[in-house]
Image (cartoon, rainbow, N blue to C red):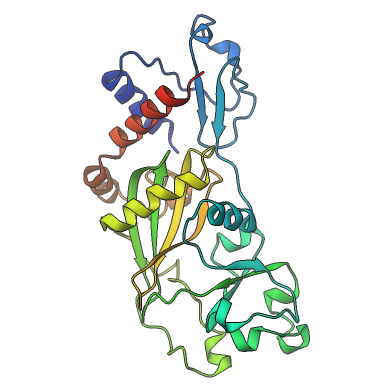
Length: 299
């Protein structure tokens, strides 16, 4: 997230809520940088990533940090958020089809691997249930590192996924990534099925602005599962047969503000960014989210 974006949001807060004092600090800064008179008032400190050396002298500290996939599943399930059934994968485990559905996805536990789009595999549940190590080729990722198994959500002939960025539940922007071509039929032979990348290919997919209201409302509801995590990059899919929405995962580590994040630098254009900002009024939405959080949680 660029400092310029933070400064713009700071100025929006000052304009919209003169009673809320706001200061932007960095990871290397310490709390004594802030005038001690400020600490005499109720305070809330919000970090969009690791907070480094900054330890507030008063009030709550809410900040972004990576959350393991299985912990995400537990938290979303506890909050009543629709999310595919998920469990640690073990060779030989039983996966009853009435509980898991006809297809499952294997994905790495390691967040750095899965966030790059590597190591995702689609399986028939009947084949995956009872699968042994020797049933896979030696170079299969499941042979070398821990994996999780997750029920497959059928998003249609072309795999698609919504990304909705929320700040304290306020939608900052939303897009839809859709694979450029149809995937092989799901009734294909096992060898064909298991070679499919079960998501839009990241190097050939340009996400497009999306404003479907039910997706936005669903993304807002996901915040209830992660009340202490300000910024969430929510990955959401729609089941084609039923239309039901599912939260696949949230990206909570902080590097999700793709309006200016390093992750999207190569593909980002001024025109595209301006389109997002105009469509969602992102800076004001962020300012209003922070004002609301401050008024509710400052102590």
